[in-house]
Length: 611
Image (cartoon, rainbow, N blue to C red):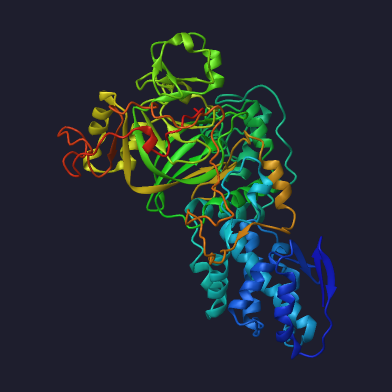
């Protein structure tokens, strides 16, 4: 048997007879444990360390001793193609040879050991790729900022559960719950890969816009194309050259799912979308978006907030289904909204806004809505000091003109990205809404606040009373909620109909290239051994040689300052009761009163430059 440790060394081991395989296993695994990349007989392994720990947990003996699990694993690997994976991602050809009758039993010595390692690696890949995604997103997407790696403990537990049960496939499927939007897009991929509906169909030629009432030979071509793409019953009509109401409705349906203005007019944008709707091209687009979904969906509860960046939409999920949706404004191509997952824990009504220096320099004269604050003392100073950006920062008071509107939804993160209201409501009427500096502006923020708080004492009228008072209030959610900021250029409904969105940030091509290649490396975290040194670190979460990671701030943001909100007006409330004890406030009289809280006591206190 020949192993290749890429970039490190070559070595080979020669043995004979079946009795040597078990005894050779541990020395072999120790040799490959810390290799960056390693291959067995030309087959790349996902992680030498993962396999070393897997076999250690099982007593350093061969695992694949019966043919049935091999056949089950082959079946799982082959069916993974329906989720966008490639057969070679799981060594299918190698597995197919081993699944042949009598193949595994006939192997001895080196060949037997190699077979066991490759089978275990195929299982590890299956678990890793389905639970966390095939690719390391940090290496693929420069705008990916969720840096949590895959967990070796979870992967090993899944592998053990699968092999210890009587049904390998069933054991895995029970623990791989996927959200409905992943399953819907998976069904759509099956439909696109199973059909060749547009093969041989000529593209629609350019020309004047087509709309209801138009009569042209191109209308008949439009009918045929929509019938094949949508399955719409529009190809048969008494007058196929007439753009009738049924065709108008089919065009509107296609436009809506494609993220276009749903006006029923076939202009340049709709024409380009129709002509770019080739089956294989769109199937590949679905595949890479399934991969994006896998990057964030692991261990997702049934309640969460879902921001669909490329569709300019946000949804609230309860019980595993979307129960509320609204339009949003996201970052421009230059100031993109990042894709990551975090946890929302509180809301801030009537927030202040600290102006980033880059914007402050362009503002010129400071209006009465703003106050200039000394960064060192926290005291307000005269506007004549506005030009000293290093010492003084500009803070906009709460109110209807505040850039963050009347409420912001906080999931404290190192990117300083959050959801918030905006006074610029007119922009929500636009079809394309990539207009912000990175944060997500919400069209109906008070509706979202009510849905998130979801308690009788925090109904709409109670929320409006808090807003009308104009004082900055923090309100903790009764239960924290995951927030997923997804960049998806394909999304499907329950019928498998797909909406293809414009790649507004130009991220698809790099992912498409990476996804078509085999994975040689990925990021898997391993638990570190307990620190047994006599002088432990003062911070129990850090070893003596580690230092805390300093969170990143948004461009132009500043360190926390106690004057960001005034202590006498910034009061923290919880979703379970009032902290002031005023009888006419939402949640009054249940938790008693608490002292006012300055922004230094809040994790989101640092000024941020994103809007």
